[in-house]
Length: 229
Image (cartoon, rainbow, N blue to C red; front, side):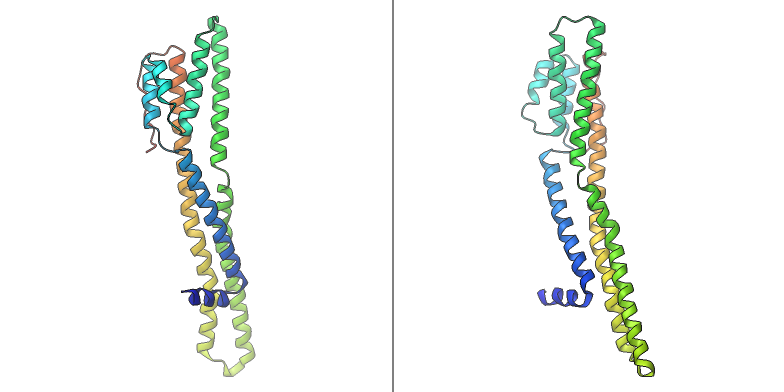
């Protein structure tokens, strides 16, 4: 297997070496993002939804306590909102003043959520760049290989060997195959990460809205379930 890989590197030339380096870097980024998403427990909202339902039904202390053991991104943000609203409730504020403070609090929590989601989205643009340049690099290697092959054909004149010409062409096409082999799995990974982020963003909006509307004295209701698995 090592001999085959070495042979492919020798045949593909510097373009394949560049694609190999890009693929290793992309794999490292993908693994780091998987760990980051797993640590933030992206997409896991069952316990948070239950806590928000308890909050809206009036059991606020238990709702906040149930989120203490949840290490997910959504639990941290929802718990912050709950704690801040409980602090507002303990202050003797006029109705208008309370509404103003609650609106500021909501903006602050929303900004914090946007910042956390932005952190989760880091390096996705770099992966997206890999999906764009890898096929182009492969195509560049193919074009350079074809140029070299036809130069050899021209130098050979009438004594050109068709077998040698065919061999030169498949070697030239090798770089395109390598470029696609790098771009396709990276593209799948980027799409998966972006989809999870969009679902997480929608879920956070629903959960935080459930907390703040209940805090404003909205009628009791269950929290809508988002499309996040």
